[in-house]
Length: 114
Image (cartoon, rainbow, N blue to C red; front, side, top):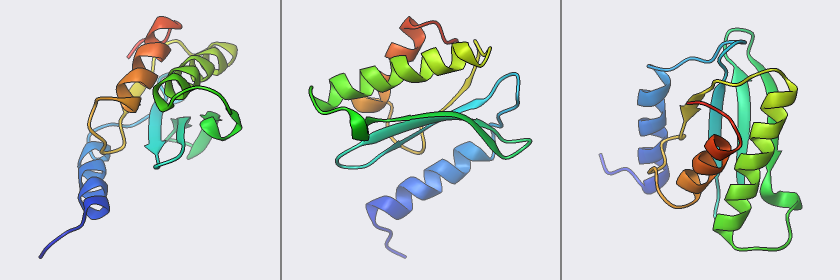
């Protein structure tokens, strides 16, 4: 069976999600990216509750990498306000490079621990 790119990503994401789980103390930092935007959520999988979210839809200036870095900084600040300093990183089946890596690095620089 031939799979397209999105089906392969969903398969990789399912494989990762079988191994990681977010809790209230250590939520899952889930990343989603499209061709135009990137977003990040802090998710408590036990309660199926989103603690915080940030998206690049409201950011108008900068390159895609700069927007991803801003989202990483924003999600780290929202996590600090919620009293969270450690998260489990969920790259969403995407390769850890480019926008995904920029978001993760910015979140680490802002004080989140993976």
